[in-house]
Image (cartoon, rainbow, N blue to C red; front, side, top):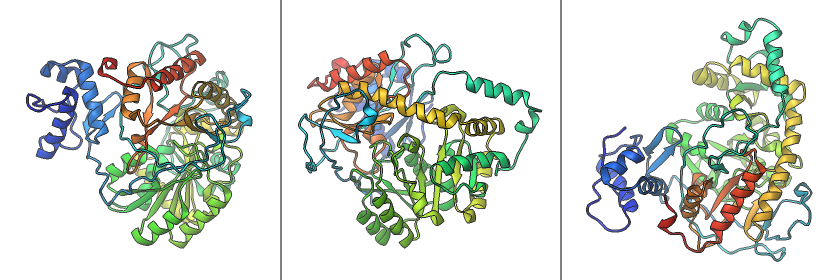
Length: 519
């Protein structure tokens, strides 16, 4: 931990802001460096004679300003300040969507098309009112561990609308498969070193899974990875070098931003509409900026819930081919949208690296994913796997292989679509009249906030009320919009989901936020 105590005796304004500004001054003067760990909340509160809540708010303000980043279970660290005027980032553009506000007359959300709920009257016109942008980046401690697996009783920890980690259905099948693995032969074959390419039957199973989504099911084009985040890291390591430009949606998966800082490549966001990135903006960036790679989530985008049309995918593929741009496609949420076109990778197969896995359908702790790529890239990608983790663990791969082959993964995917639809009915029923983007079988929504509500204040007050949310700043490459993602797959209890969304509704209906809410 860094031995650093700010001097807040001078200056004016609230104490929490003086602390946050002191962090910025210390970074500017070289007293703090990127990666330095800041004092714990309690230690700093003790030394300054303030409450722990004041320090918590100060650190969140520092995160909002891009000066710090909180890591669950590890503490708060100094980050490289994000300057939205730097030429490395393209400021975000207003995102406008069809203002179709017709409310469902049934709880069968799966039968309702993708739409946006607004202020109560249906219209087919496009809302062209510019989005007011806010700045928010708030981190909170994680939900405490349950006392045992899938507790029946309602937990008393924070309600987790922050993590997009759907829970699998309650059943004992995975237990039985693990027993079968243990009884089917010597376990040594699964716990000794193996090639980074994986065993042939493991690759075949993952290729079969890729084939279900419309990709070539040739196992020679598939490599097993320790989850999709690992696959993403390997793909970026393979194709970029420090200083290279990587394009992405203007709201993107937060881990991409973390990798950009770690691997020292540049990020630039591409303006979006209700389908995803705009082809003309992509073409212009390719002509003027010479990017090397583009990372996209064209099906059930996180966090905006959008899915590219077939026509849009064709247009984007033509631009990628025209400018020799490598595509890294994240398909992790694709199974939730059965009406989606084939992966974008299918439209430009000669230069597409497709990533997927079973973290959302089976369980995030299993950490099994795969890379699907042209054969000419496989050896280089395999080298990246060997460099980062030597090999994907054999027991996890064997479990995933059996769950794929016996139909469990596909069965779980069907269950998740039904469960997401049921939960969405609860969410939409409470947020009627607010500006919500959703998909009828998806586990998260995008909530655009009214002008009088600051995103960081809402997220902070929700946390103080026992509900964890994710602000737009975590996804933004450029200026963040005024909004947040609400993910509702991590809570087992329907009662907790009801309570959590009603808490958010109460906060949305509160016109003023004050320090009295901060504890």
